[in-house]
Length: 422
Image (cartoon, rainbow, N blue to C red):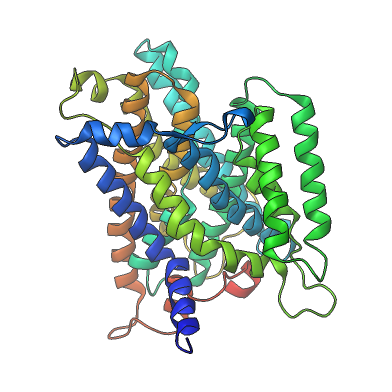
C-alpha cells in the first residue's frame, strides 16, 4: 500500500505527458484502421454501433456516439481550463504580446476553409461544402507531442507561440461547432444547462469543493446541453471556463492547475484514444468501391487544407503582421522557424474527426473525409517532424540535448508565457 501512491502518481504524470498522449492517439487510430480493414471488420462495426444508455432520457447512444459526445467532453474540459488559464494568467492576458499568434490562428483557419470550398466547388461537389470547417482545426495534444519529440533544443518561445496559437484555434473551433453545427435548439434545456454551469461556477470556488461534488453537477450540465441540441462537448468548455485561474483565499495553486492535473490523465489516457479508436476506423479495403472513397473531391480538399492551407495561413498572416505592424515574434523565434509550426497546425485529427461526424451523415463523404483527415494529419506531422529535426540540429549546442531550453520544449514544466520566453 505504501508504494501504491507513488506508482499511481508516476502513472498520472506519464499519462499527462504530451508524448504519451500523441503515442496513444496514434496507437488507437492505427488499431482502428487495421481492424476496420481486416476480415474482422464487421465486429468493429458492430462494436461501434452497440447501443447503451437510458432511452427515457434520450441517451440510448451508440458507443461511437458516447465517445464523441461523452468522453470527448473531458478533453474539452481540459481545453476550457487551459483557455481560462491563458486568458487570466497566461500568454493571452497581454493582448499586444498575444496578437501575433491570435492573428496567425485566424489565418490558419480562414485559408484552409477557403481552399476547401474552392476545391469542392471546382469539382462540382456542392454537397461537400458543409464540411468546410474540417481542415480548420488543430489537435493541440498531437501537435505539442510532435514538437516535444522532434523539437528538443529549440527556443522556448516557439512552444509558447504554438501553444497560444493552438489554444485560440481550439476556441474558434468551439465557436464554429456551436454556431454552424447546431441545427435546432431546445431553449428550456439550454437555459437549464446554463443554470447548471452557473451553479458549478459557484461551487467550484468554495473551499469545500471536491471532484465528487462537482462531477454530478457537470453530468447534469452535459445532459441538458445534449438535450438542447448544442453539441454536448461544449459543456466541457463551459465548466472549464468556470474554474478560477488565480489562487483563492491564500491557496498556493490556482484551481485551474488543480483540475487540469486531475482530469488531464483521463483525457489523454482514456477519452482521446477511445474517441480516436471509434472515429478513425475508415473501411477502404473490401469496400464496395474503394475509389469512391479516396478519389472524391472532399479528400483532396481536406488534405490540401490541412497540409497547405494551414501552413500558408499561419505563415502568411504572421509575416504580414510582423512586416506591416510593430508587433513582433517572441525572442529567439525567427520567421523561418514558423514553417514547421504551420505544418504542426495541420495536425487536425481529434477536432477535425469530430467536425467530420457533424458535417456528413452519408457513408461515402464520411469515410472519405475521415480518410483525408488521417492522411493530412500524417503528412503534416511527418513534414513538421523533419523540419523540426533540422532546426533543432542547427540550434542545439554540439554534444548537448538537455538543459532548460530542451526541458521547456519537452513540456515537462509549466507552459511558458511570452514574458517568460523573453
